[in-house]
Image (cartoon, rainbow, N blue to C red):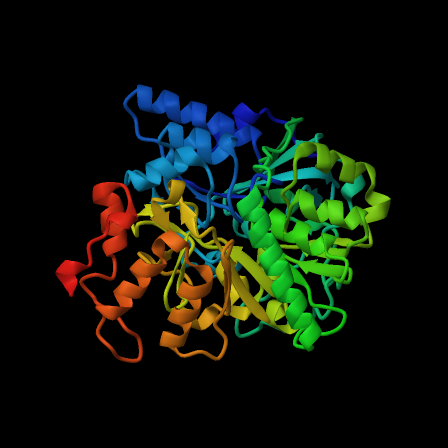
Length: 498
């Protein structure tokens, strides 16, 4: 059947106050951009007229300014899950203006299917090609597109974005698991295994219109590496090579997952440039520029991901070189790229960034001083709990030394001590495997803490009540309190707790 062409404004006009929309994409990659920008204009006009207008938004991960940003600016978001990185949105969340639900990314699609989060009224999907029988080809990410398309009770809006080349057809592996008790094993035993189809099959009768556009992805260019991130990358690479030489990591190595950002790029760069490191595989949720570069250099053999979170020049180059990437790259849905079952089966080595780690190995990856949301847990929990090796990295200090990333007790805990094997800062590596709580505390202070904070952390242990873990409950968050009150954690005064 021929689908009706509509404008983005006409598509946006279908979305009513109180509706929930489900979007394709994962990070700004593959996220629809034309319709959401027009929804923001409607929200502005409705609010100017004194009428309410807010919607709920379900996505695979974060979006860009044309969704989270402009909708947050116009106070158009009632509810949002599962992850975001937009600064405007973050400010509204921390001001209490948006109900934000931080969810493990592997769980987002199934929680929608289970009915935990409410109904999906509309699905808005970004595609690079459409067939009359309802086969659509996604763009730069898998996300939760199959689930929101199937659940959308009012209809599906397709954004046919010509920025994304149809040359990419074939790299997606679209697969939606059945729900319990009918769920079957996810039959992925190698990084490049395919279990689905290269297209998403939707019900053509649910398509209310096709919005044609040409809008680049809102890709983020990360900061260049610096001496601190370079040293963290070197420490991680040296540690892993040591494990390889001991035979703990098999001769051919194991697949890697790494989080997003400058530190992740520095770690991958250090691994790729190490002459003793064999060419390796990647099973991850987000593919960044560094991995693409290593694929061209044949240092990365193949990669499975949910999202091409690369700069637009790199994405265009990839589209122009699909013959090179076609047998080396697979784009999956987030519940497959982040599946605990698959991560554990493949023996993925997970490397993610923490805001802070405490003396016993708990990690905080989401909240500043326990109250202010940074971004969200993302996929770090999916990977770290199920990894062959669970590694968290962070710089030992922040804000010019006024904040220690190694603290007596995390102000918020996303990853418990049971899920963290290794902590790495530019100071060194703390291997927590097989250690009791107090042994972990000694390893973390000695190897990961900044010299400005080592004695303070030793002092904390001295005033702590002894048990399996040593703590002084009154002083446990005193470094955070010192920062809030004095602007510098080094101004902590433990004497009143002795």
